[in-house]
Length: 226
Image (cartoon, rainbow, N blue to C red):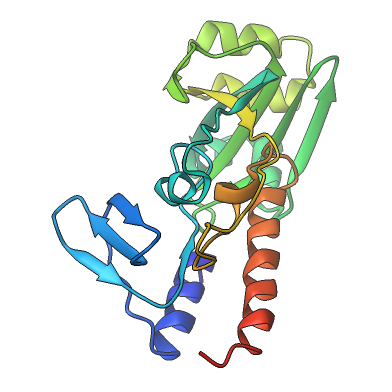
């Protein structure tokens, strides 16, 4: 079972209503109201925003006049996937598909994290190296020849997998500066996860910290009477 499905089922079982395809247009701190792009509005006693590190609408309601700009790192990353059928066509690569763990290949100022995804349908490659993606773009098509050049001296085994890539994306890697507050002036809007403290995507700590945030808020809510 995918973790997203597990969380969805758990939320529904506890009475949560999950509304999909509903991008937020605006939030009002005084009335604790969320306005969606389609015009619908929702109000509540408390709003928790977990809408990511890039252009978080909830963070805008919390920070008000304080603009928050992402801090670019000195690295960027190529991302690509290889179908299981191609991986299975080579005995050495087939062994990687049978390993559920994340594997890491480390070189000078660059590394590769790779692991099976989608229940073994794809092999995921995240290839970090020194450099920058295009300014203002977070997710742009990458150049296969450039990607292969960066890892030309890596282990022959992982280079086999890279050679099977037919398309890649180039990702900007950035985090956020430390915010002065994760709570709005009214105290009724709070940030969670990347919206509050986006970090570089190493060791999946962004997701881990969001889970810890949720657990902490859950404990605090136990002490609320209204």
